[in-house]
Image (cartoon, rainbow, N blue to C red; front, side, top):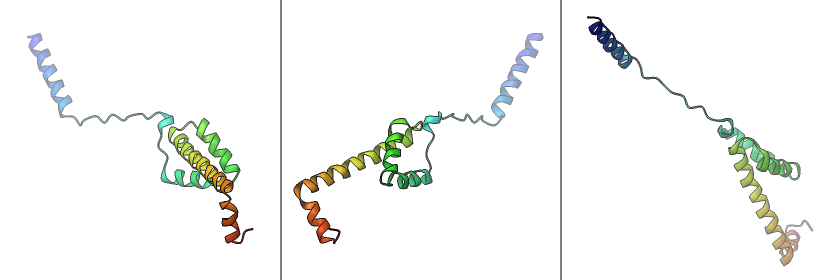
Amino acid sequence: MAAAKSTKRAVKRAETVQESEPRIIEAVIPREYNPMGMWGYFFYGILFMLPVVGWIICVCCAFMADNLNLRNFARSQFCWIIIYIVALCVLAGLGLLQSFLHNFGIL
């Protein structure tokens, strides 16, 4: 008799568990993987465009940022800075930079 009561209780518990709403399990994202918002990318892009201070901040963020998204964004901007510097050196080496500056009235 006691065994029958315990099985009825177990069945009743199982029914209540199945009838209840499903539990929502929230994933905890580590801090370094938190996504950056659109405004974050916008303002960091403007910050990295500043001539000297922005480039220094870009290099610091590229190597020392805690957030992985910010670090990758800073690395991509750092690669663009390197590409611009190489293109400027190539143009200066070919003498084309002087003709461009002369045509635009800067020199």
